[in-house]
Image (cartoon, rainbow, N blue to C red):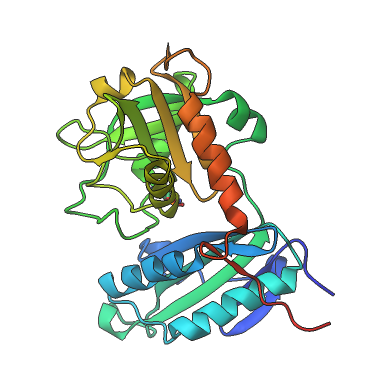
Length: 299
Ligand code: PMP
């Protein structure tokens, strides 16, 4: 029987999500030393799985992590993990950590790296109601961790700056938050990239951010629709004056933003280009070029 609450793959074996355990000694937990990725499955199809695998493998190699799982094996495990849940819509997370050191050792070179993944019912970071009406965004004064210290292009579990900014945003009555870099330019938020529209083009930061797969999708969809996209520094002033603002993420898709720092964006309703991008993003989930059917065992 399937495991509809979720399935995990830990230590080389599949189990129901409630039974998945990792060690309290794992360096992923004690040092946040690891990388991860999250891909989603919608109506039985993985969304841009190849792009997520590329990013995850690049992250592992940047951090010198090698859990001994090949790309082909990884792909097989992810398919089986989802198949074991029986879910049509799933949130699928994969992690590789520095893992465990031999007893008594502090030499990182001797660690045995851990790989695990799980598939659970799709997690929405914005409610469907929020997605219809748009969200409020706060520009935080908490600076993002410098990219020279922790490379944001490697998806990582260093979220204390993001979480602190999110809690501050709630205090200011906002639902979403973006952080700035040391020079004051906009970077990203806890789990999403940001876009603003002005001077006839979409603008999104290029440096100091994760290369989001949803960000990439929006760039491609905007350009296919004849729009222009500029990737480069984005100032807080420009974002506050944008005619449309949106954020992008795997767990939220294309999310309209209707206020920035308490002031309405444009009319204060989700912008027409944003609504169109959001519609075309979800419509693309049946496209065989962007999605792959989950391989299910023959009945
Ligand atoms: N920035 C950060 C910090 C993230 O963690 C994420 C993903 N959770 C994103 C941006 C968006 O990336 P993607 O569109 O690939 O989900």
